[in-house]
Image (tube, rainbow, N blue to C red):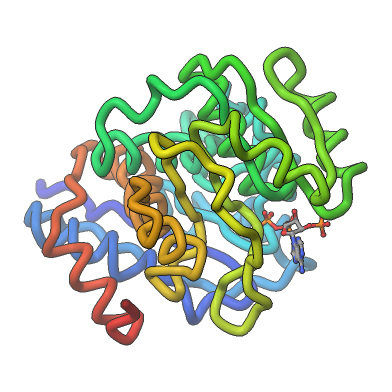
Length: 280
Ligand code: ATR
């Protein structure tokens, strides 16, 4: 008897702008798999009952996105190391009827840089702008790669301090007014705030103080090339775009449910860029 197709989902509220169905749909087709990956809109109040019904609905697992990542963390019965450290879950799966959770955002961040700028992790000092969930994933990735110093800079310094307490060791916390002073000793700059995203305010910092060998990376991918990345290119600094993190975090999730490790190809990237409206 043929095996039943594997079903996966992405759930959020709202969900209609998610590119995940396009990404996973591309890989399902590419690998000739019978599975499915669908977007479901679940309001926060309905999220716990949705999780309880996964088996009944025939899902092997799925992704969770805003605003459910923290709730998924609380409801998962088993967490992997990354989810524990980050305090949020973006990938769920069932194992012997138990709900398990992981966070593939840190993997996605590092794998994107591995692909775009091999050797990037020989940098020693990083500055992370922001202190939300995305910042936690990036700080975890940087700690895993053994960065000596990770400076967390946030408008609300108390939140940066919370992250410093959480991650300890190599991290320090700073206010926005310290950016200029810290730039000359920064090898890698990562924006994890929503600044620069279409519809948000611009990230207005001068990169003049960065050393010539510095790498600049943004997790914002609409537009594809943010002002931060354009400024970095104008200074001839190496850059990594945010779309890659989205594509690579999906690799680890897809592999979890469909047991095939897919590739982030140029063709996939072009499809998503096209869907984003050709954002340059
Ligand atoms: P996520 O979980 O997606 O990272 P978040 O928790 O809402 O989202 O975090 C958004 C980040 O963008 C925060 O670091 C936020 O700074 P505050 O903690 O001070 O709010 C940052 N951010 C958003 N708008 C900003 C602005 N206008 N100036 C500076 N930082 C901003």
